[in-house]
Amino acid sequence: MSISVSNPAQIRRSQTPEKLISAEDLAPGEHFIDGAFRAGSSGAVTDVVDPCNGEPITSVADGTVEEVDAAVAAAVAAKRQWGSMVPKERSEILHRIADRLSEHSELLARLESANTGKPFMVSEDDVAGTIDTFRFMAGALRATTSMAAGTYAAEHLSLILREPLGVVGVVTPWNYPLLMGAWKIAPILAAGNTLVLKPSEQTPLTTLKFAELVADILPPGVFNVVTGRGSIVGARLSDHPDVDMIALTGSVNSGRAVARGAAESLKRVHLELGGKAPVVIFPDADLAAAAKSLRAAGYWNSGQECGAACRVLVHESVADRFTELLVQEVSTLKVGEPGAGPEIEIGPLTSKGHFDRVVGYLERARRAGIRAAAGGAALEGPGYFVAPTVLVSVPDGAECSREEIFGPVITIETFDTEEEAIARANDVPFGLAASVWTEDARRSHDVASRIDAGTVWVNSHLVLANEVPWGGFKGSGYGRDLSIYALDDYSRTKHVMHNRGR
Image (tube, rainbow, N blue to C red; front, side, top):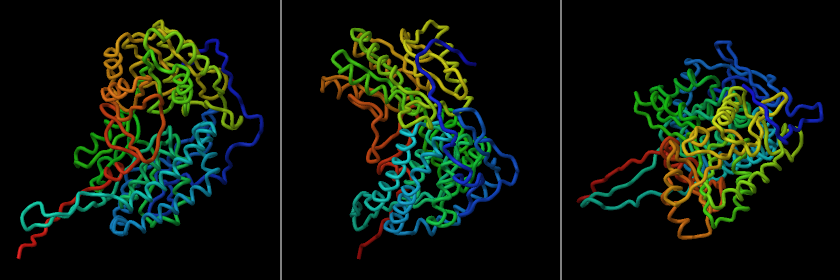
């Protein structure tokens, strides 16, 4: 379904015949198992599509249960040697990975933009974040802390050991293929585990390139990739008896499926799922600063961002002025293909299926009487482009303000009292991120403490750092990415008690 309304946004197209990538830039479209690429046994493949025009780029193998089993067996065989390395050895390897990625950063950015449609400013930021993730974990793994050894029972010395879990199965999403891969791979390896990773079948190109780039750095079997569909590859990772943990970044439905599969073997589960981040704007807020911040935080990566500032709750006394400022900011966003130039800020949505889903939300909102003050429709022409949108006159409980649209769409609602704002901010199934906008320091502390989200920003939104944790509550899942808390998630603690009585 596609709707079209009058909108000043125009798609900027590349004016040169050269493509972002060539066949020589691609890694083999095969599974990476035990240190080498391996052709798919079934012969079935999935096309990887350029979202700027809907045309195939290449194809990758569809994995089978048997290929997952082979990858897990390789990871099991490698786990003892990898897990027994001293921290310094693993740290040096992670630094070598970061160096290798840095050497190929321009190629990785082009691959990511070609596969996902990301503007270069987004894909370059993803690559830089990926490199920094490995560098941070390379340092953090050498400085882990635990409860002090001591005599907690008479004449018995207690030691707390931190051990690897073993083999971790990983499922990564289509919106940040390389960066979300790094958020899992780096701490999993740092903690001494081996892994088998399933990238999204829609966006596997940088994951496969990563495997190719690090093949001579990591021992065989430590890192494995099986491409294919979640219903086969992801399901087998979830229920495989030799997989000690399953870690997923993805949709709520994917998280439920993974958790169900993991339940039989009681393996640990790490879930980073969806979000519907409320942005609570009080009357004393710097409205211009808030609008400028949301220009980026609401539309970064075309809104395909689980922490996006997508649901504004603004006090009714300043709602009209804030809406005016936000629409002015949004009207300056530049939409186009990544190859059209470095100034492009909004690319296409990543797939036709997701494009149809987002446009469906916009059409239903229009039929419900919700007005688009900016955008509100797909943009004409090839590719999966949706105009940056601001929906206003949004009633409490509207579908577009409760469900994760995951596109370049911000909804604006109004509130009267502080209690109402907090209650409505929490009245969604998600709890990943939020922001509070006020110049009142006491209010900012109090309101932030009462919002049910894993990250709450004050007078900013979508600012991340490797030193601090990322993860949510409620339907947004559990487990933490980034920071030393990720190392905790991918480790287990063991208590060893020595009788030292004489």
